[in-house]
Image (cartoon, rainbow, N blue to C red):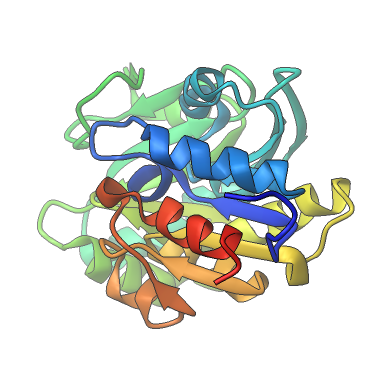
Length: 271
C-alpha cells in the first residue's frame, strides 16, 4: 500500500461491532491498514459510545496516541496524554423526569448509569442485564446512588420490550427532553438533548483543523447515524443494524472479516 494516495484526511471508527472483532481484539490486518492510512496523511479518531474508563485500555493496547470521542460524543479524550479535553454531562433532574415519563408509558425500567470523568464508575441497578466481560461496574446499593454524582448517560432496559421498541417508545415520549439512542444489543441510552457522535466528532476534528468533508466514518449501530450524516462518506459493516445500512454510502465486510481494512486497502490502492 503506497502512501500519498489516500483521499480522506480523517478516518472515524466506532469500536464495538466495527473496529473490534467479536473477541474484543483488533486484527493485525486492520491495524496495518489504519497505519497505512495515517502514513498517507490521515488522522484516525475512535468514536465510541463507551465512556473513557471503558475505552482507555483498548486505546492503550493499540498504542493509540490521538484524540478519541467517547460517551456517545460527551467526551473528547487525548489518549496520548490520558487527559479529558471536553466533557458534557446529563442534567440529572431532566433525566429523572424523562425516566418517570417513560415508565408511565411502559412500566418499571431496569437502570444503569455512567458517571462522568476519567475514572467514572458504571453503576448497575437490580435486574439490569450487564454484558459479560472484563468491563468493570459497581452495583447500585439503593436508587439514590443513581443521582449521587454527575453522569454522562443513563442506560435503560425493559423486562419484555426489545431494544428497538423501547428506544422508539422512549424517543416518542421524551424526545423533546433528552436524546435516546440504541447503541447495541441491550444498550438503549438516555443522553443530553442534541448530543451525538457527530457533535463530539466535529469538536475533535476542529481541534485537528479537519472538516466533515475530509472524513470517512465506519459504524454498525443506529447511534452511528448522526456520524454518517456529518461525514462525507459513511461505511456500514456487514453486521450493522438495518437502520444504519439504510443511510450508509456503502456496506463493507463484517467486523470479524476486517471490513475496515477492506475499504481502506481499496482506497489506498487508488482503486
